[in-house]
Amino acid sequence: MASPQSELEAVIGYTFRDPALLTLALTHPSLAQEGTGLQNHNQRLEFLGDAVIQLVVTGELYARFPTLGEGPLTQARAQLVNRTSLAGQARRLELGRRVLLSRGEDSSGGRTRSSTLADAFEAVVGAVHLDGGFEVARDLVLRLFRESGADLIEPPSLDNPKGELQELLQAKSPEAPQYELLSAEGPDHNRIFRCAVYHNQVELARGEGRSKKAAESHAALLALKKIRDGAKG
Image (cartoon, rainbow, N blue to C red; front, side, top):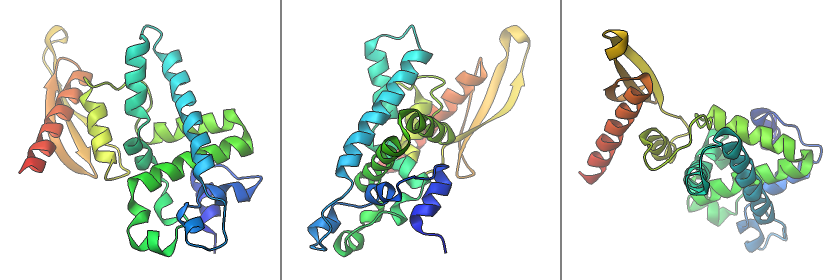
């Protein structure tokens, strides 16, 4: 039977030359506090991985959007790289069941805790950086973001309901929202597009606009309102 570490290597598409680095990345600090004799844990790798992810995303945003100033770039990066989004990446990789926890931390729900998951994701990226170099870590981060639906094609912002909806949904589920074009009617100069947004194969809302992008944004906006109104109730 494959170990959790080798399973994870298959999932991320990278095999460690030093498997101990991956084990360390998955080792929660609670094990050291439990008196197991284990002194090393993943906090140093988390620190490194955080810097690597920040640099990768910053570089990608800088290259893709040459007209954006420092403020919008900072805002875009903050929405892409935060504890919620990184925990969502960890859930996609099923790091919760692979992380090494103390009995106490495990019994108190540590495997599903967003902070634990985000830290583990950062630590895994840090481990890949040490083992394979920055370019390997960069390719991994960009691929994982792309697979989760955050392809950095357009910068997320507070004005971007699609980005807000994705962040909200991926705080609870690894699945990204999916958009479907339902119809496009009218002459070319006055066409109306209608789109639906789905999550886990459930339709959340439908929107319309003068372009496919506008219709998707409208659907996301309506889905956000529906979710938030439901939370209030």
